[in-house]
Amino acid sequence: MLLQPGTTCWKCEKASRAALLIDMEAYFDAAMEAMGRAKHSVHLLNWAFEPQTFFHPGPNCTGKESDRIGNFLIALSRKPNLDVRVLCWKSAMPVAATQHFFPLMDRRVFAGTNVKFVLDGKLPAGACHHQKMIVIDDALAFCGGGDIGPDRWDTPEHLDDNPRREKTRRDNKDFDSRHEVMGLVEGAAASALGELFRSRWLRATGESLNACPPVRRPRWPGKIAPAFADIDAGVSRTGAAWRDYPQVRENEDLHIAAIRAAKACIYMENQYFTSPLIAAELANRLRERGGPEVILISTEHSPSYFDQLTMDRTRLTFLQTLTTADKHGRLRAYSPVTTLGRTIIVHAKLTIVDDTLLRIGSANINNRSLGFDTECDLSLEAAGLSGSANRAEIIRLRNKLLAHWLGCPAPSMEEAIRGAGTVGAALEILREGGYCRLRPLTPKPLGPLAAFIAAYHLGDPVGPEDAWRPWKRRKAAAADTRTSRKAIAAVAA
Image (tube, rainbow, N blue to C red):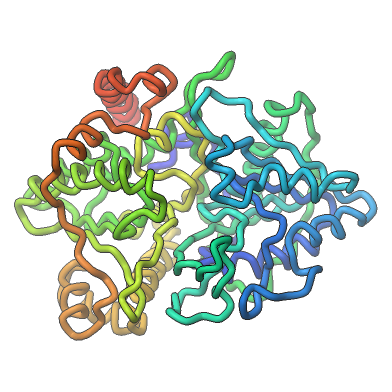
C-alpha cells in the first residue's frame, strides 16, 4: 500500500463510490446538484472564490441570477437547519486583483445573510491556503484543483470559439481554454474531508464545529457515473510549521513513494514542474534500464507574467534534469493546444501511477506546494486482488485523459497503446497520424537572469525559513531532500 497514514497521507478511508470529473463544466453541474440536495451542511474551502460565477454560463457569460454561486448559496442557507459555510484564503491584494478582488466582493455579497463566510489568514507570511473542496453532509465531497471563478469554466473539448467562454474577462477579452480535474468521493472518505474542513475552520476562527449526523446513502449526482466502488481513498496534506502547528509534508512523501514504486508508467498533469526533489526522483527512474515511462503534461507558458518569469524559467531546469537522465528514451513532456493552436492552461494537479494510484488535488510540483502552502490531495489506490475492477478503471481514465488531449476517440488511444506497447510510443504514433494537439516541451538554454532565477527558485520557497531569504533556498531544499528520503525509507522498511 502506498497510502500509509502518518507518512504518505493523513487518513486513509474507504470511498463507497468515487469518480473523476474532467473539466469544470462537469464539476459545476455536479456540485450544484449535490449542494441542492444537502440535508445538514454545505462547506466550501477555496483558494479563490468569486460569488458572481455562473454554474452554467450562457453566451458571453450570461445566465440567470439564481445560477450565480453566491446567490445560490444564499438561497440554500435559508433552508431550515442547513449550515452553509465558505472558508477562503485571505489573499494579498496583488493576488486578489487577478481574481476581481474576491475577498472584498465576497464580504459584500454575504454580509447580512445566513452564509457564514470567513477569510483565513492564519499561516506564515508569504504562504497561501490553496486547498479546494466542497463537503456535503460529511457524506459526499469534491476535492481537486478547481477554484470557483468564471475563468475556470470549460469543457473537455476545449473549443476555440466557445460562446459560453467569450468576452467575460475583466479586460473584455475571451477566457483561455483551461483544464481542471476534481475527484468525487462518498462515505468515510468524504467524512475525512469534512474533518479537514472543520480543523481549518477551528484554526481560522477558534470555533469548533460538530460532525454531521450520519447520512446512510447520499444522493449521487445524476450525470456522473460512479467509476470506483469500495476503493481506498487517502487524504494527503501540505502545511508549513506555524506557531503551534507542526510541518506536514504528506503530499511530498506520497509523490516520492509512488515514483519509487512505479513499474510501467508515471503520468502527471500539473501547472508547475519545478521541484528539484521530484526531478531527482524521476531522473533516478529514467536512468534505470527497466524503469517506468514518464509522461508530463503542462502549459506551454504560464498565464501570468510573474509565473512566466519565475516558474517557467525553473521548469527548464527540471526538464533538463530529466532529459539528461533519459538514457533509454522513456520521457515524454508535452504542452496542449486547441485545434487552432492556442494555449490550453493546464491547472490540473493529477498523477496516475501504473494501474494502482489515481491522485487528484491542489498541490503543484513545486517547492511551495510541497512544503510551504496549505494543500490537500485526494488519492484513490486500487490494492490487492480484489481491486482488479478499480485498477482497470484507473487505466481507462488515464487513456481517456490522453485521448482528450489529442482530440481522438478513447478507443483509438487504447488501440494505439496495445499496438505500440508503451504509452509514449502510442502518443507519438497518433501525433504523426494527425492528432497533433500535444506539442513537445523541451529544455532550452537559460540566459544569465533565467539561470539565476532557476538556481535560487525565486518565487518558490521551500518553507518559512527561506520564504523571504532566497539565498537560503538551496540549503533549505537540500535539508528537505534528506528529511523526505529518510521518511520514505522508513516506510519502505
